Length: 83
Image (cartoon, rainbow, N blue to C red; front, top):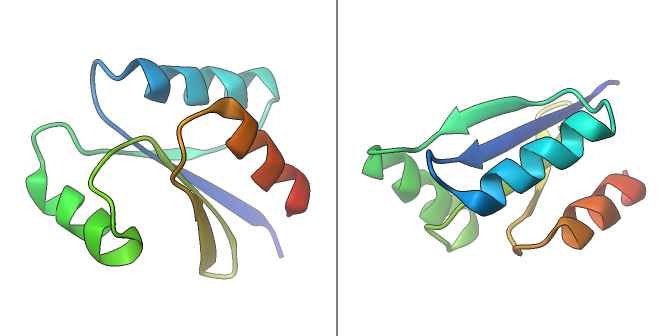
């Protein structure tokens, strides 16, 4: 079972760039969902996690995901260690 990471982000988001840079620095593969000017994508985040902000980092295996919704690399790092 392989781990999948999805980063929800938007253009001009400093925190989003920080997350992407962190993952690249750790050589962690990820895909990205850009929500720039896509309010319907924010609606998805609201339904799934009760938030409309980015970045959101989803980490999962076999279509079961947990999400890091808190801002700060320390939260992403902790979640990666737990998987």
